[in-house]
Length: 449
Ligand code: S3P
Image (cartoon, rainbow, N blue to C red):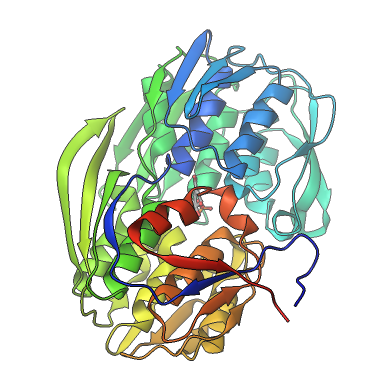
């Protein structure tokens, strides 16, 4: 029984009722942005509850390469001494962003409006992902970019002395593209405008306002959001409290729904309306979910989510909901495997360009575990039922969310489910195994023959 070099196979076993309380780690999107805006503020930003996953450690290392002082005071508590807007310095070496798509794309915007060259690269997953969606608006701002074919990493960008403000309508509903432009706009004279026809997560706008940037937003009659940012205004350091990541909470929530007799409390979860599409969808499916203790932490709504195992039914998830749950479709597909009838996820083409082609990896993994699916270029349908045979081995393709989703499947399937590599989980949720174990989830190290 051997595995491929460096891979850590792991098996999830059918488990008893899941019971107890967990507190998932800090939100990944907010964690990246806290370090980046901290690096541009004049003075010292403190961050509490920072996610210490691989993706965020890549951003911490990148900000150090740009000259900011980034230190961990104690687990979860960090300090960033910023350099001021336009004050980043040219890195000595290549910035290797590992698996972090959000990190590298936002950092391209951040560095892009500085008149020095930065070369970025990443792991075998990240070098396959499209970067043209970021380079296209940055090029319009006068930033030069040389990339591998189809605008893939590794790539080098170099800003002009004076970047040009643009008005840009997003062609893809992507918070990463919106944020890269806004971060570049910070060091661009004049007003840069981004028009977002479909709402995506708004953490960048909220945080820029808190740091004192010259930002304003308005919603048009057609529902489109226009964000205007005046560049070259100093940012004031902040004390940031990062709420728990709803995308990480999703694994415990779905596990509790599908493992019979479960009753779990998931504490301190971000409830930003641009992030909770999964909660709405699971509720439509008949999930017994309630949100208690709603409060505001660091300008974001937060609450505790109580979940009890439930009989689920299939639903159609509309395309308009995709941006508010884009990272949750893999685990929704696991819930759908246990739901009565079919669950159709429409308008999810973006899943094909995430850490893996998530439509393809979910179809392969579900098929290997006896669950019927139908896929289209932009759709995924899961044909659910009471019985999920399990017993399969799943290729995680360097994708943390695929890894965790199939471990969740194994907790309720009839036979154990094996993933070929658990190491990607550390990019976003290093404590996943331990936290799930405290609820009663059973995992064992596995060899793959
Ligand atoms: C993120 C935006 C999303 C999401 C990613 C985090 C962000 O990507 O999938 O995990 O923090 O801005 P897109 O905006 O490209 O859809």
